[in-house]
Length: 68
Image (cartoon, rainbow, N blue to C red; front, side):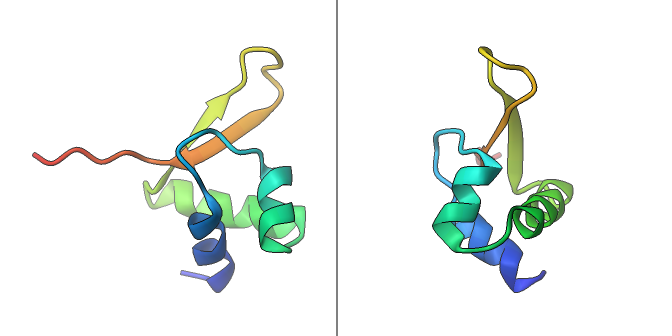
């Protein structure tokens, strides 16, 4: 997994965070953050949430795991 994906994962919180906010927190470009989020989503570590006020905007948060 790329280092940028690990950086983004570390910056995620329980509340939905936009890719723009993640770029600010990690000092990565927005394009790099979007790529990292894509990798994290493909690996099932992040969930994407659409904001109700504006469905064009998305938030991301760590996926919650429940023990079986």
